[in-house]
Length: 119
Length: 110
Image (tube, each protein chain N blue to C red):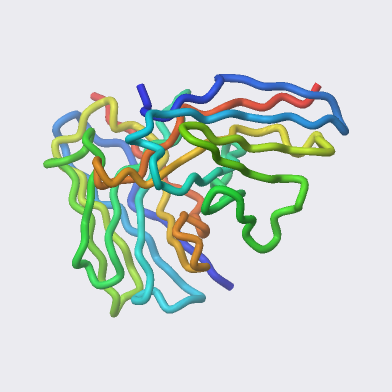
């Protein structure tokens, strides 16, 4: 079964750091690009970051550029999001998502992990 | 404010056909494909339409997508109560080197 499972969310103070993980199973992780998408409370979906299968191409949304770092370990079938200098507006459910069915969209999603930035 | 504009809400009765629009600039839409996602609160978003009008395996043919010029539409026919959800259009914007979501449309089945 194709599956993405996020972890690492929690409560962190403004200015703090957190590292999210996404464990992939049921498909050849190293062959596919990955994304992070978030949804703040009461808001819509917001794309956060993209990483290509071999990590050659990495992109970020403007709101996280310079503060967040996406990475992956293909040997461990895992995707990461290092979040630094966290702000209250980073409070959200964070989803990892992949394109494994040749749609060029995000066709497999995890269930999400919640990040709360508050003092 | 997203570069893709969607109506905040839409509604319909069971069995009805509803459409949700998504509009943007010519530089945003241009040659870019449009994608549609369905999101029920508390669950993982689901890809409904890819490359303007293609349905992933398992998505009922009640859902259809189209794109013309600087706008796109998602149509849902034979509306069902389980279609009540938030719907988002999205593109990959080359100028931004990133994906962009519309603001989302909350669909209510009356």
